[in-house]
Length: 208
Image (tube, rainbow, N blue to C red; front, side, top):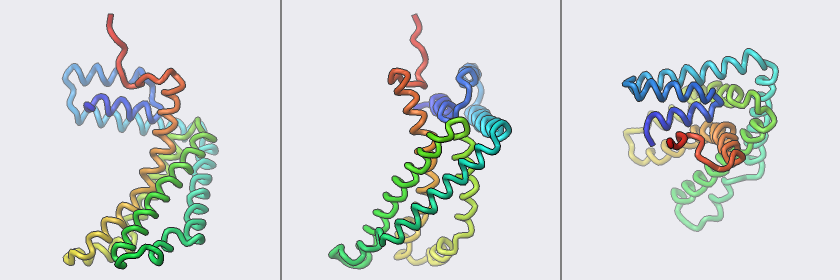
């Protein structure tokens, strides 16, 4: 997939005007740089988010709070049920292997749960889904920088045995953010495309 196709898809996933995507494609074809293309794409997404915040501030706040409430409930329910830590006691293997199985299972459950959470938010708040989902992702990301477990694992990096634990922890931290984008932005976009007849929304019309 080319840069212009990726940029166009990103714009449409984020609810930006199709005319804008067309204008950027024309400018890029006329010789604009890739850096310019992505700078304009980011600016367009920021403008869309700003517009939604300005016109529907209460709705955005409600959507953000709903997403956080669902996410917190999901985390508490998973830990209360003992998933997937219970696998440490039932998988017949060395502790290291059992830990990997439990961690990967947890990551998969996280991904599915957060996708569903974001999809519910996007469905109930379609007018502000872009602003709400991106706000949650951006507001939750700084927590990764001060995560004590991440710093502890990073401090032990000279020892190779800690590498799998660091990788799994980073993936576990990134997974909810990716899942929110998939459930809140990508899935609604794909659903809209299917209701329009299943055609690729980023493809250009055929010339005659």
